[in-house]
Image (cartoon, rainbow, N blue to C red):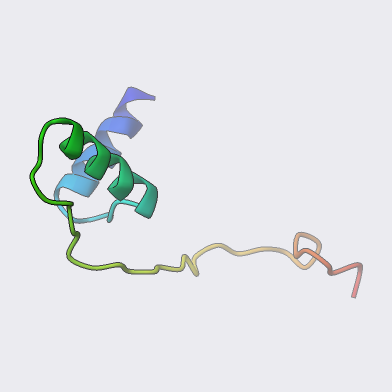
Length: 66
């Protein structure tokens, strides 16, 4: 499990995976607690969709044997 956490850390560090809005808020709170003079502003907000997920017809919500 620790490898997964390490991989997620390095993916975020290297810009492979962006941090979530919740993580952005947490970073802002930590920096403010450490005395950051200005609020943290992040470069951009990107909404990503994972289209690689494939569901069978039985797994689709609301699909009752159609």
